[in-house]
Image (cartoon, rainbow, N blue to C red):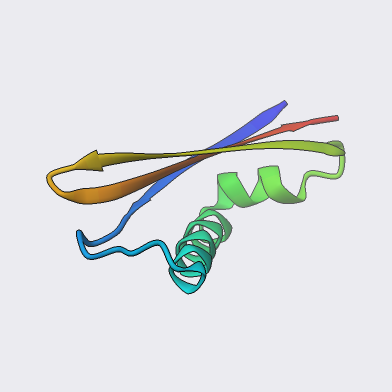
Length: 73
């Protein structure tokens, strides 16, 4: 079993457009790819199932997007 946790924050003027959400998801994915240990979880051949959870919190007027992926085989 493996897991990747990450968060990204947005400015207070975040409006939640589809384009903004895709940009946030891309940023999180690219950050995971840039980290060897996270990337190894993503490409591990033994893992054939994935669970993804996302939540949003507010801190100091900014949206904080949290994501967790769990990998199992």
